[in-house]
Length: 370
Image (cartoon, rainbow, N blue to C red):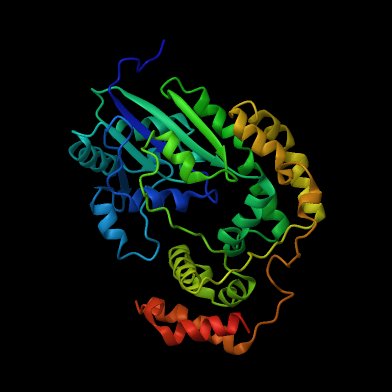
């Protein structure tokens, strides 16, 4: 029996995964404030933001025009069940006021793929909505090859985490995070979820989102978002700033600022590659079973995309990667560039907008392109 057979309202949840194109999806949803499906119904993107407030369009669009990253999301909590009862109550009250007249509701948080697969967290999130109304719930998830995800995740989280004695220690904990099948099977088996759409990062995520939401096509959407990779010189400099390593909020903001800086100059770089042959073999061996099972959860197009992407299966896919030390101990940094990046970091601490400083931008880019 379909629990929501007669439902007239929908909840769309984009659940990540992290490091799988979430920023581009959230940019699209934030910058296109009047989304409508092919039936002419509004698709209302909403976000849960600190300290537990609900923000809707067009406020999302308007506030992002002054933000470095140009998008909003619901990354406020990946595990809603762990929030205090008072905070959950505040979110519930705010949510029900904001969405009472909305028919198609959409939220996005890349932390939810591993977070709300847990029934307590999923039920808590669902409880924020009106309990007297039944909803069709549809899930969108994006995955990528485990090795490429792990290399990216190292620079996002691992290298800054002092609790790990070595890269190998961190790697052992990171590999299970890419058992996509394990997490997504919980969504497939959840009787409250009507549909789970799983795609791979190689696919065009804008097209995927348009089809998932049944949006009108060829509608001149604003989807001009490019996620630039930061290079080894940038990371090397920031690894020398102790307070930066210890402050996750500062790190996220500075990375976004540098991302915008590089984007403004169309500077292209590659994130350092830290996985050697032994690392890659270990990842491929430990994830193969889960990857094969994942193929049973996806449609034919995504199955073909994953099968044909050798990064999921074959070490030779990484033969052209130039190996770097995980802590960049093999890299020496020009003192002037080190001081410049530190200056930009300090400027950001003082809320100085170096993005608008042509002199600082030119100096930084000149060093990188020297």
